[in-house]
Length: 225
Image (cartoon, rainbow, N blue to C red; front, side):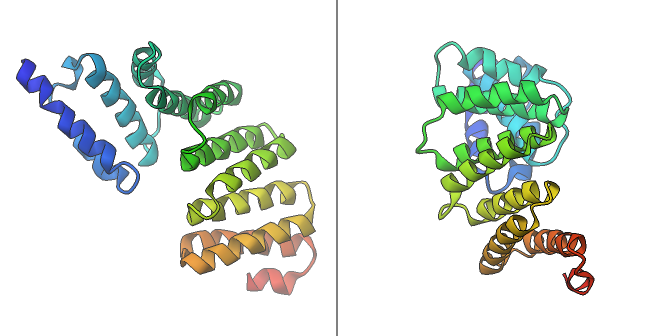
C-alpha cells in the first residue's frame, strides 16, 4: 500500500506542470489516479488543490467547498505558504461561482496577504477576481481599481490577461455611461488583441465597441463594429 500511494506523487507533479497550459489534460491525469480517497497527508491535500484548480480552469462547475477545504486545512498548519495562498484563492472561486461575493472577497484577500508580489501573474489573477466580485455587487469604482491593479502586475508579462483587464476597465465605465473613458480602454484592449493575434478577445472588444457607439447614437459605427 505504501508503494502504491508513493507512486501517486509523480502523477500529481505531472498534473501541476501542465495546469497553466493544458488544464483539461491535468484534469484527465488527476481523474485517472486510482483510489484517490485513500490518499493521506500532503498527497491528499495536493490532490484536492490540483483537482479543484483543474476543474475551475476547465470550466467545470465547483458546486461546494468540501474538496478545497481538505487543502486549506492541511496547508493552514504552516506548511507551504504559496500552496495555502492557492487554496484560499480556489476556495474563493467556489463562492464566486455561487455569487456569494463577500465570502469570495474575504478569501481572495487572505490569499493576497500570503502570495509574494514576485508571483505577478497570480497577483494579477487575484485582483481580476476581486474586480469581478465588486462588479457583481455593482461597486463599479472599486472594481475598476482592482482591474487597474491587476493590469499593472501583468502588463508586459501576460498580454492576453492585460487585454482582458483593459476590456473589464472599459466595461466599468460603460455601465456608468462614461462613454469617452470606456472608449479609451476598449481601444487600448483592441490594440493589444490585434498585436497578439487573439481573435477571441478581439471579437469581444468589437462587440463592446458596437454597444458603446449605439449608446452614443452613432448607429452606422455600431453596425460596423
